[in-house]
Image 1 (cartoon, rainbow, N blue to C red):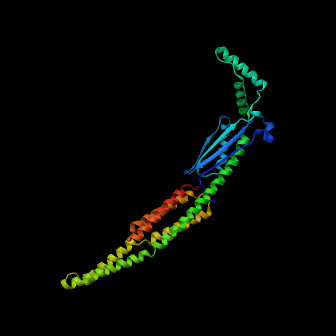
Image 2 (cartoon, rainbow, N blue to C red):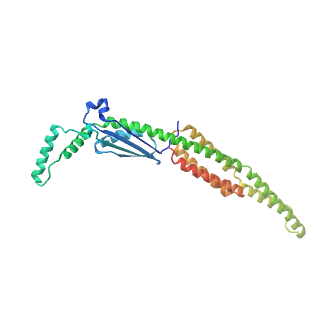
Image 3 (cartoon, rainbow, N blue to C red):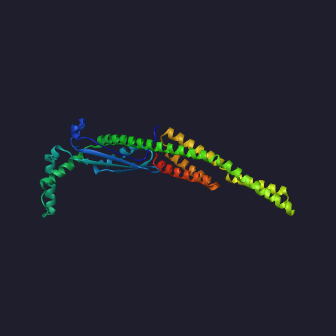
Length: 307
């Protein structure tokens, strides 16, 4: 399955209602419908709808449509209707004119100073009445479905880009792990040599003063060398780092809804890199730990956008 980002944008619109084959069956729904869908990252799926009054009844159907495709992300759906009747003018019906005239008479009976309806007022009301009576449900679901397909394509393209960047960072981290591996035995050997030199010095001192026995000095040197080796041993951290890197690579190949799992693994990588840095007894190992944490932080930013 592809890797999907939670970031994307898509839009769609229908043509004039007159261009639809079903327009004659519902001529009142004249106009152009536009839908925009935009999404950003979020821990869960958070849907927001900004719809005109005549479309709000279809929010439940839109929600079902989106939840069937999207799993995570803060998603905003906007829809708008533009009236596009013939030549931009909707001819009012006789019935509507009669109703408007009756309403106007009733209003003027209570408010004698109220002005009469103008031609522009009548045309505006006729256009609003026409749009309100139309059934936009089929067009709304159709346009939203096409916009959703566009959003999924945009999220897939962005997801592929993020996956490629993560794979590059995985390669860099593996290189750092390989560089860190041989440093620990070298450090232990250097420290062992220093302890042996101290032991030999101690033997020379005790031989002249008759103090601590050479065997005791040797035992202490060996004890210190062992403690140092245990303290700086990062073999387990390097093994776990490699294991986490393998799992991240597997998830990227698998695709699908992997964002939460990747986020957990990034936290584990950061934990191991911190432990590696705290155990470092050489400048080179410290540098490797810092480089790891920089890469892991970059990966964290990218993973937070993956579904």
